Image (cartoon, rainbow, N blue to C red):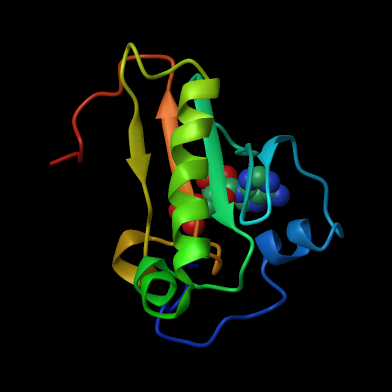
Length: 125
Ligand code: AMP
């Protein structure tokens, strides 16, 4: 069931639990501001999720409330993970589902990195 991204952050969401160490994750990168791990249900040969460490529901929430350091750290982490995963030369896709119409399932901002194979059209018609 997609979340309502206009609602306040819910501390019980799965990624908050991963950040608190209550659930495992296959971590590929971590720093002060961001955590990146393999998606549990990969939709491409490379499918990594990058999340900020702060409690933000969505991109618009993050861009509104996060500090400059958090924003810089998160954006840099996404790029570093893409480089580390070796997807830059062949190309890759970033995706953030936000709210109901986009089907956001987890109410903690996350950017999907897809790569490692041809990715097809941006959206199905
Ligand atoms: P979204 O639909 O954009 O909210 O994407 C949520 C993503 O989180 C999906 O691709 C799920 O497969 C992934 N996911 C859910 N639970 C976990 C988990 N425990 N570890 C890693 N990925 C997860």
